[in-house]
Image: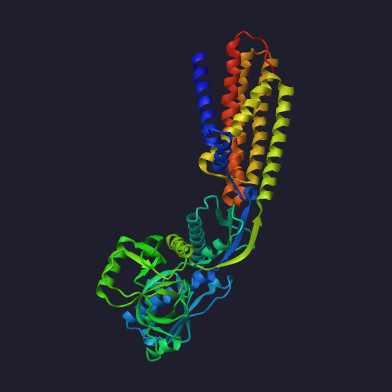
Length: 540
C-alpha cells in the first residue's frame, strides 16, 4: 500500500513539475519568469489589444475566373473538333448575390453540328447546364451543386492564403475564421493581436498575387492604340494587351502585346525570397520553380533565347527581360521597389494567389489598455470566485476542504500548462471557461465528500467509506463530464472563434478535473489514512 502511494505521489509530482515547466519554463529571475509566462500563454485580441478586420470575399471574381477558364478551354475544344461558332463570351456579375448566375453565351453554332457541340459540353464540362437559345445560340449555366462547391472552395482557399500571408509576417497569434451569421455570407474575420496599425497588413492581404510569365509578342508601346496597331487592329485569340506597372519607380506606363497562355504561374513556385541586387543595390524578388515547372521553363527558355519574357503580377507587367540563356528553375523579379515591397511580394508568392478579391467591411482596434483592463477584470473575477469557493470548502468540509483546495490549484496549473504546450490563445471567453471549470471541479469534490459522509453516517469504517465514496461518485462525475464535453464539441464545431476558445478551455479543465478530483484527491485521502490506519473519524 505504502509503495503504491509512493509511486502515485511521484507521478503527481512529475505532472506538477511538467505543468510548471509548461507555464514558466526554467526561469532564473522574476523578469525571466514573467517573460516566459507571456511567451507561452498567448493572449487574444480582447486581452492583448490589436486589430480586427472583417472582409468580404468577392465570390463573383471566382465565378468569372472559372467562366473565363472554361471559355478558353472550350474555344480550343471546338477548334479541335472543327465546330465553328460566331462568338463566345460571358455575362459580368457585379455583386455577391449574382455570383452563381454567371453565364457563358455561345452563338453561331451550325444546326448540323449541334449534336457534336452538345457531346463536347456533356463530356468535358459536366458541371455546366447547356440551354438552347434559338437554333444556333446556346448558354451555359453552372449547376447548383457545383456552384456551391466553388463558393466553399473559394472561401477555404482565401482563408488558407490569408493565414499563410500573415504567418509570413511572423504574427503567429493571429486568427482567420468565418465571421458567421445569417447576414455575413462570404465574410471572414482576421484578428491581429498586438497590431495597432493594420494598414500595411491590409495592403498585403488585398494583393491577389496572381503571377504569370508570358511570352512577349510585341512592345513596349506608348499607348494601347499603338499596341493594337502593331497587330493591324486585330488581336488573335492567343494574344492580349497588358499595361506595365508603375511600382518601384516605373514611371509612365507602357503597353505590351503578350501571349494569353502563361509559361509559368504562381502555382508553379516552390519558394520566393527578397534580396538586394549586387551591383545596383536595388531590391528584387527571386523565386524557385517546382521540378516539373522547371523542366517546362527550361525547354521554353532554351528555344526562345533572344526573345522577351514578361513577368506579370495581378494583370500588370513588372518587367520584360530578354532571355539570354536557358533557365532551369530559378528566376528574378526586378522593379519591385523597396525592401519592404520585395519582402511583401515574396510573402505573397509563397502564400499563393487569392481566388477572389477582398472588400473590407469593418476595422476595429482594441488598445492595450483596454486589454489590460480585461485581463485585470477577468483575473479579479476568477480570483474572487476561487477565494470564495476555497473559504466555503474549508468552513463546510474542514480538513477535507484542504484536499479540495489543492486539487483546485493543480487543476488550474494543468489548464495553463495545456494552453502553453498547445500554443492556444487565451481570450476573455477562455477565462470564462476557466472560471466555470472551478465550479465544475468543486461540484466533483462535493459529490465525493457527500458520498463519504453518507457512508460514515451509515456506520461504515472511515477507510471503507472513502473507498466506496470515490467509487460510487466516479460514475456520476464521468457522466456529467462527458455530457458537458459533448456540448463543448458542438460549440467548437458550430461556434465562432471566442466560442471555440471557451469550449477548448472548458474541455481541458474538465479533463484535468477528472485527474485532480478523483486521482489526486484519493491519493491525499489514502496518504492521510496510511499515517493513522486505526482512525475512527475523518475531518469532513
